[in-house]
Image 1 (cartoon, one colour):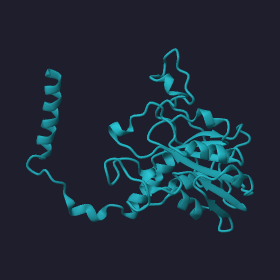
Image 2 (cartoon, helix red, strand yellow):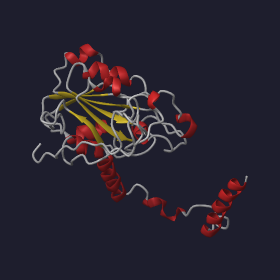
Image 3 (tube, one colour):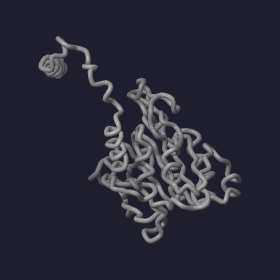
Image 4 (cartoon, one colour):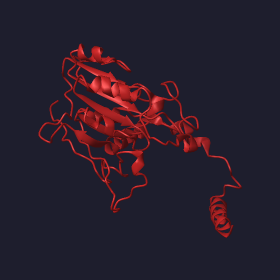
Length: 267
């Protein structure tokens, strides 16, 4: 009880200093400044710099990324490719977050891809395509965007940390038929090891929020990958808890890991 009292006392002290008991409501005089272009520009930069490249081709001399902007036809797939709510995650408009594109203003990753590629490049979007569709599509490459559904606090507790349905089947169907990069939208490391050998490139995009254009900026080589893992990426949940320096430290990707891919001058 003494520790609880001490913690509460310190919280109350800060609130008194801030004057929250005299003026408990927020100052709404600047609400018309929210979402200004300079704010979105900064958010887009944050997305670019936070992306972590976890895999890029079978070897360093045969990378998949950056992707060419000009090609005949590409496939974009996955439940998170065209969903602004999923990009934003929890604590967005509502406590647990929402799915869909009508909750706020922003750019989905699919829209960003369409804006970035050459006008002559055909972009085909199919959320969860069958394998035969992919094999017969004559796609130059595929971009698969999957991840977790929005959550906050206890509702996000998970015993398996899996990619939400139908993400796993999308990866299998697409990446088994064409060269692919998988972009993971999540607020934490999820179990990706079962699919790692199948995909050609892997990007941890975390929760990019409204500025999906920042993902396309790096994916197509306008900017370089520079993000590093701020947390260990485990192979399986059975490894938890696992910390750097422990004798059994054997992650899929260690703390601080992150590949680089040079930007393309003329794409």
